[in-house]
Every structure is written in structure tokens, then in C-alpha cells.
Length: 72
Image 1 (cartoon, helix red, strand yellow):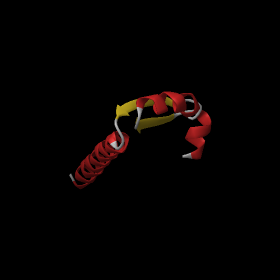
Image 2 (spheres, rainbow, N blue to C red):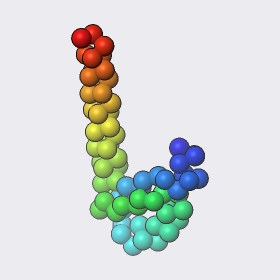
Image 3 (cartoon, rainbow, N blue to C red):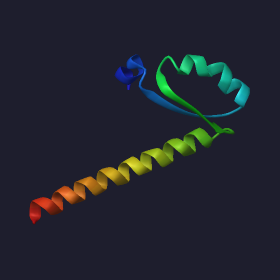
């Protein structure tokens, strides 16, 4: 969120015209240490969705392992 942006810790996964990405990259690096060009329009959103899904799966696995440990 806002705190991570102020600290410059965000990750940006960007899709679109590469020349426009290069023009915006300097501005994005003010808010994030990782700025990745993913390809054409929509690929940045696809990468973000995949990243969020992987994070959710990891969180579910951790929760299930904790529940199992408590019950055992």
C-alpha cells in the first residue's frame, strides 16, 4: 500500500507498448524496487493474478498445517 510505495518497496508488473513502459519506468522506480516489463497489454495483469494466486495457495497451506499441528 501507501507505506510500501513511500519506502519504494512495491513490485510493478507492467504490460503495454514497450516504449511507453520505458517512458514510465523512471516514475515507477520511485515507488518500487522491482519494475518488470511483461509484454503486451494485459500481461502485467496476468502476472499479478498468478502472483496473488500463488500467495493465496501458500497462505492456505500454512493455515492448514497449523490447524493440523494444533489438532495432533
